[in-house]
Amino acid sequence: MNIDARSIIDAPQLRSAAEQLRPDADPGEVVARAAWSVLLEPGDGVAGALIAVHGAVAALQLALGEPGLLVPEEISPRALADARSRWHPRAKAEAVKEALSSCREVGGQILLPDDEDWPRGLDDLGAHAPQVLWARGDPGVLHEGATASIVGARAATGYGESVAAEIAGDLASSGTTIISGGAYGIDGAAHRAALGSGGKTAAFLAGGVDRAYPIGHQQLFDRIRASGVVMSEVPCGGAPTKWRFLQRNRLIAASGMATVVVEAGWRSGSLNTAGHAAALGRPIGAVPGPVTSAASAGCHRLLREYDAVCVTNAQEVRELWGEQPDPASAAVRADPEQIRLLDALSSRAPRETAELARRSGLAMDRVRSLLGLLALDGAVTQHERGWQRTP
Image (cartoon, rainbow, N blue to C red; front, top):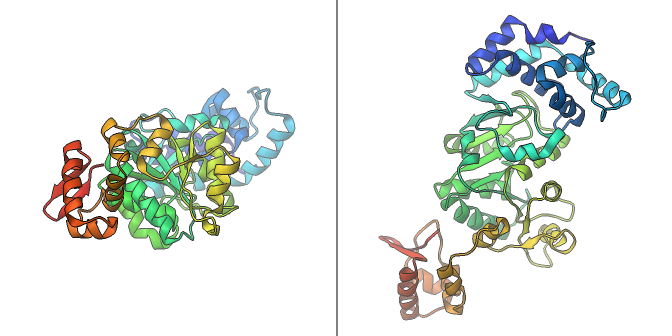
């Protein structure tokens, strides 16, 4: 054993660091939660069970071998012994102080499960829920209306990135917060589209929020922090590992009202996110792709084997959590030519009539006529630079 719990919780330097980071919270609770974040690997159910019964402070004492507290019945003596052998090597006051200080230095914050800004969907993870979240930005965006998790392949195709951007942009422009993992490919396309439409987005990372991973998304993470939030259960300085990526996926699935997989290989990590969503009872959407595309094999597998719903646009994603389509939109979809014109329109950038005619394959006069009808229904809006689809 490296140190006892009280020497961590009552350490003046640690309590001072906690008060600077969270002046509105009990410093002992903040220190204990930060200590748990240092001790654990994400998703540790033994720690979750101890904390659920005894609270973070007392459970830390039990975890480090101090007598006087009963062990919950669901934790066997062997499981507790194994857990302690995992935790003890990390039980160092210096590591906890570094986590708190590093978070403050990068302008971050520490979220506790009872906080108003805590993502309530994470509570459904039970004993495997995170004990603390480290955040940079505004975690309140996860409480501002609907939330949708959009994930997919890192090695995405142009088709996949285009569909992800269209769906994420449409959802975000109407108030849905887009959740993803900040990776290359589909994740990045979803985040950028949400930001480009003036909407909100949240990125859950597998490493500390003080480092950009992948490094090529440094500017993207800066943009996300400016109007959304970047979060992790791993303390600052923590490196992303394969296990942490897999466990991070449960946070993405739990935070969204639905999970949409846009592109995924047969054994993609995105299927792991979908599996977490299914375990939590969250609806799953999958975007179909060419049957010859290996990048869509995982989506087709979800549709065939895992009761996923086929989705192709933002409205179909909204229907996953029970939001019904607008009657005017339903009428529009009944007209094949209006469907073609709507497909040619963008909800993020105006397009001129000639461009819409080219994209839809309709005559210019017919495009003008249909635009007038769609404008009466509120489905399109005219701007100086052309026509735009109404979110």
